[in-house]
Length: 118
Image (tube, rainbow, N blue to C red; front, side, top):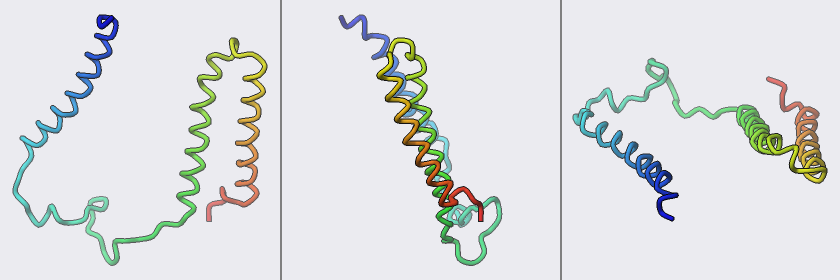
């Protein structure tokens, strides 16, 4: 029975060893001396001026949140579409309900003008 899982165990072992090896090589090859340049904040290759803790508009986060919601929708739609022929009418109706809920959320965001860049 262990023969069947040997490939999976080998893959998991290699997947655990490679990141550890990369970290070890990085640690061994990195410079250890602390310089004033290392302590500077890096902002697009230019020195920062003024206050560096700037608050962002919440609109950026709303765009990101809406992107994540529709990205997760795609993750749920893909396996459903692959097995569409085998699932039957019940799964089709369930997916229609799922898409309808997402469309209601999209319509609400549109109505509240969340997508309008100000």
